[in-house]
Length: 239
Image (cartoon, rainbow, N blue to C red):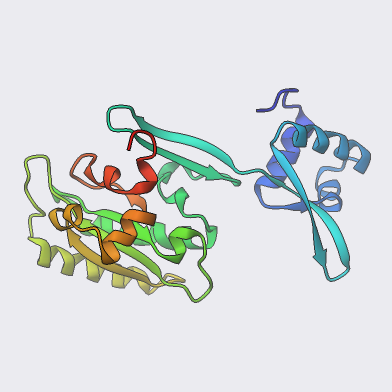
């Protein structure tokens, strides 16, 4: 919480730091303000818990860099089931698709969004939309340049209990083809694993178990709150 008021100078600092960590010299060059003035505002933002600093080693020596502290945004709270969905972020959020903003590393988010768009186009008109749950290194924030994106796609059911209009096997084929087309333009390959909703709900081992223990929902499908309640990340209040 910013207790001292958000002045124009501090707003400018926050806007600069949304792009990523900055040194004092970089902030001086960007803002046109002198270093003593910037230090005063940065100290105030540090005391308010908004900005943090750390000393890093560079090719020319050691320097102090400033960055935004991660902040928490609660997106959904269901007191009846104890389900909570929150984000921790240190950069600007894309509010058009907040579930994808849970992906910790920015370099993977655009690929995930492109894959999800292909899924949405492929199942347009379906009465039962699939869920997409990421797991593995990308979901944990440990992805590298050679990491694939591991995804569990839960073939959902509508509120009347019906399944995808094509049946699970044909639905899987349609979605695999859509994802393969999206992969041609992506920087990272998405490796999908498919499971029907009923199997997802009763399975606690293997890939499904890993997804339940560490997964993040990046696309909500049909079937009510069943998937939310199965994933440990989202049932931290009353479970």
